[in-house]
Length: 344
Image (cartoon, rainbow, N blue to C red; front, top):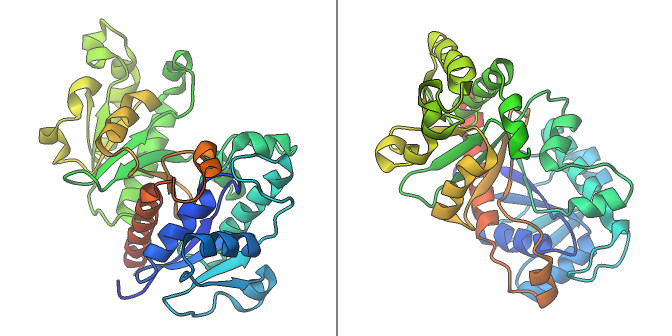
């Protein structure tokens, strides 16, 4: 890369594996990415020293960054924007006192991305229960980012480069009970999702004319209405309207046969109707190397495809695999480069 992208990494739940995988990935990609860790500087420095004494961290105060921005620094150094912990960390043991700390790291990243300090945000896993136990209603990173950026609709997409060609799977619905999925898929919602998906594939991935394949909701894509009418009443009209606007979008296809190489080799993304329709395929193909991407935001955000792994954190450093964090950073860097190119 001719210009290293500046990527903010929120270190996540401090009692989980987030701090370790963030440091390992930032250090491994230091030649290509200008990594800015956000978290307690003393805690992260102690963790880095235990991982590898050669890792160099340099702390900045938030006020210094607000006054002067992110300074240039050597490629063999990782900068930390200091955000002090509220309580001592015991690996593997949650403490609600640190719930607000986790949100503060996220707030710094969001504000910095909007101020232009960062080209992208990569988030390490957090523990929703800890934040709620701290007295802050919280449903997840995605919803929080949407609220903080005043974004009315976002799209969850998982992606991997660990397959013969990049595999991207976006979702029409996310964390819903299966009984609620059909009602959530409306002409209005699906149209908005396709608009976001098409625009971000162009602007954040550099794909001039995205090719999107869309699954049906029901078995056999409804089999002509015999197994459900959502394909006839909702999905097909939305796709036809999108095609009339110039979108290269095709479907609805039966989900059980769509994920074949002969179909995917011509696709830039698959839009699945619900969580467990699309994601098992991607996770089977690339478990541990998948990346969660939030589309529709006025910034770039990627994340790992796993949780805090408190059991691994309790077992000590060296137990966690940082592969997903590496991929999240690589894809964020690729998206940052594509975004720069599209804005020229």
